[in-house]
Image (cartoon, rainbow, N blue to C red; front, side, top):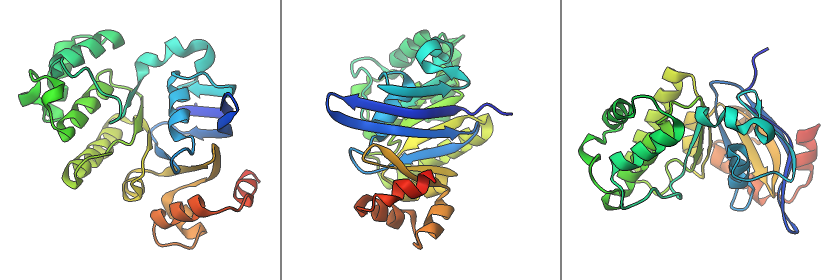
Length: 252
């Protein structure tokens, strides 16, 4: 039986008296592009942070690439990576210097060649010696992707991968992620507020609300289940629903 890329069991995170994530369980097969969706405060980013090992859960179990993250995180950290438009790279360092730093952190062999390859793939050749702070938002997004791919990760976690990008650059990023997943068989888990993006990229979706997973399935399945035409309409239905039976029906 194939070990899933991600297995989460009864995961909970409580800050003082605030329950950010409540008793969620899910698994994602290797080679899948999946998404965690929900409104602001749903628990998406907290969940990603726990998967990365940046936050310790209050309760629950996380397995990444077959390893218990609470006990053996060091075994898989070099096989995963993360990108977010809301996490800035050092702006005074050049693109090359930033990527060299992360190459060292991940123990990348022959980092100069890896950086040159990524620069060519991500159209960064002309910017390698520029400080990151002088780049446009689209260019910085490509640098963040290069950083996230520096170690050829088997698992890539992306928080709003096209957030704040113009439509052309966002479309380029989506196409790149599609091709990367096909070529490498890597698993990608992302969060996004762009439902068209999720419909295009993802075969599995987990819908979160108030820290809980209230539904899951493929985009087509969820659209059909809720009798809607688009995933955005499904998102709005769930976000506005006050029906607590959503979670009960999902669990049964």
